[in-house]
Length: 436
Ligand SMILES: *Cc1c(COP(=O)(O)O)cnc(C)c1O
Image 1: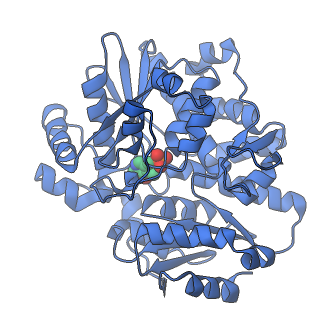
Image 2: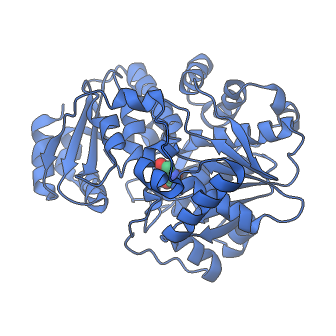
């Protein structure tokens, strides 16, 4: 299948090129030329399939023309080697827990899928030289991508993160790995990290010498596999006989996750509507209200993975709906919450239901609580384990929170990182001297 750029200033490219490039040459985001609908029998039987089985069918619709069937099956089965339970929190509200993967981040699916697909293309081509993955992170992307690519031959990963601005647990998850993973500690903010990575992609000299790609959700191989989650959510609701009028609420930052859900709906998944939950970075919420998109610098909140002032996948959302604000509003609702709201939600939900939310999931839960209509069933995506925001959550509920064994493992390693300034010249010099 071919992929076009949302800016429509360049020729269509192959899947391989879309994955290796990340961003199109006209700075647009790649979109598949066609979104196939799955047959009615698939949805009738979906509750009898395993997560891996149904995801393989979804993956074939996207990637079946470009990846041999057996190889694709292996990529999917290998990617999804963990569970994604649906937990009832209160009457009509369910939590889809996306944090049972290797780094306890929902981005594990995209990180693992992309690393295996990229490695498939490298082997098929027998390509010379290494592919260099550059990734900017405010916390969770770095760990999921680094762990997804750890030990994968032919690929080196460089994680850029803001010094002193990620949680201790998150930092351990990508600085202690070694092998083909290098952590670059940037004297600056997340925005500086993202700017450095973008400048590298635009630098002619670097691109001539090296193969560079991005593992942020602009990459189709990172964001599309997230659609698997939505099919599985629906299947679990169907098992309970509650699948009519399902509403899925997604705590959103760069809007990669929710866009994958919108793709699932376009493939025929019978979800009634979506809700995008924002924190104080409410650019999308304002867009729904006014029809105007006004990006602005992000502000720091308790739900830090949603601190995005110019969501990169907004370009995909408007493209998917033919640039019609009215059509977007028909399928997507919005909500926004302050840090005070988030704190109150975590406290109240824990007191009343016994379910412990993290700050991101809190926005999702509260949006359903506020906006669910009669007859609807709500699922919110619980995108992080509460222990990742240990002191915040413990202070709110006044109790100790247990750290899962998987997270504790990461905290045993030794931190290795290279400090760099926020100047592009320094970053470029590092890349020129170290990339292969
Ligand atoms: C990445 C992330 C989000 C936001 O996801 P997007 O795809 O960027 O919208 C929400 N919560 C957590 C915990 C995350 O790590």
